[in-house]
Image (cartoon, rainbow, N blue to C red; front, side, top):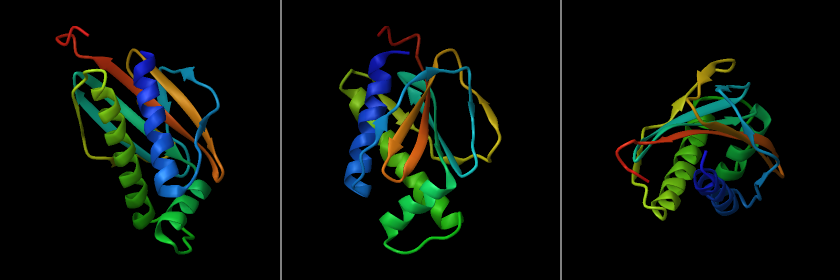
Length: 156
């Protein structure tokens, strides 16, 4: 996978976490994968189409998901409910939108599909080139899974 794809999403995560949550998000490593596996907690996928096509999966452990929404909402959150999942879907959407803006700087024009929540324990085929980026924050670790391919017609 091209470094600019990964870097665009990593920068978007770091920017959004700093702005919305006042948290640093640091990549711990990067691994190539052939499928995405959802985890307990909140799992949100976002489809990407245009010059690049594919899927991004955000996997947030329950404890971290609750803490993120607590920070954003300013109130105690004690269960993973529709409110929490909706808030995390919006965070994933904002991150993905920022990543596409970053990719636009490399002359890729893409659109997002609406976020979808995926149940825990599901395996999602990732396509030819996919990476899993574990990220560490002050409130826990989560993973960003990216599978993107160029449209053959773009010639980029």
